Image (cartoon, rainbow, N blue to C red; front, top):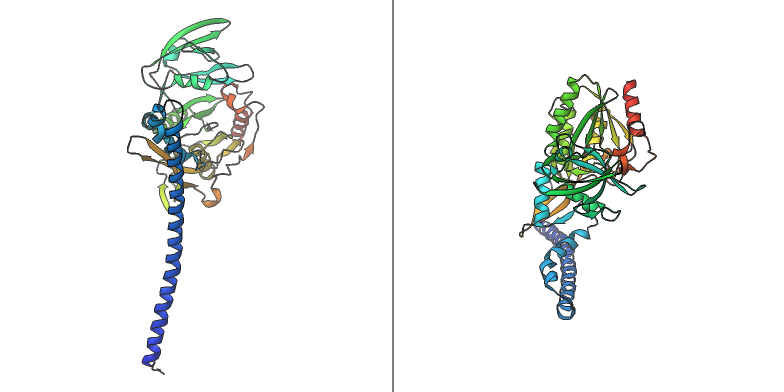
Length: 400
């Protein structure tokens, strides 16, 4: 049965609806307004404080202000990023930005050595000399102790800075003084060698692949290494991503694609702060027919963590070692007008098995925990017998 509504009642309902809509709109508008005013007030106070500091320095500082004036912009930019308390975000000068992108796209250029500082002896030791490198041509060998670099004596406080000379601009010359069997020699070595990110060999009949970074070249290097191991007849492979943190999530996903089969769904997605998918990573490559183990430790970070996590979840690889660093985010570069740039964390990485597998701030636990009796930083100085994590992986894969 239909009922008629009077004109007066109809008008009353319309007025009530309009009033309710207006009230709700005013509440939200007030909240937005208060947020904007608060933000403006905070920013104004920040700018006023910064200007006051600048005025005091300009008027009263007893000293040369040329360096201050030249570097103020960069210092402010670094300050903005540093208060984020995120070690993955950083400000880069124009030259640092150029070096960073060149390294990602073209790899690292160096003399062809890897070094370890032995805190127990105070020695900077050559742990690895790459085949075909200028360092090899000049006669440097694993086990040599570097005593001086460019005529500066190596000490505990400066060895990190001196080691930076082993990488950098192509064709630069590095002077190295070293000791072997109590004999001291000096050689001049050119920075001309493309440092590989994938080092492969056989250990006790099992493929051993150490990844040092995830750059653009890593995908092709990994294909070459695994193809060679397959052709040699090995059936199992150990990936070593201990102390591996360099590179990007995108290049790590390409490396994962080399190893795993074409799967339904994605190998990872990156979600922004609103929960929206910013980027999707999928697998399309044909898998290599190996059994896998992955060596991890507290130095396994960022891209290397995604690699280990997805191999565990897709290929049922055993993770051997200790828990990883817990850096499960993705960064993006933003160019600034003066040629500098900011590398900013923009998304959370969600691996193959979804939210439950997210490792940011918690790390990835090994499926087989194995601790070392030595400092993790000295891994390259260990033999297979001394490296309990590597030995455990070898023994496990031999039983499969």
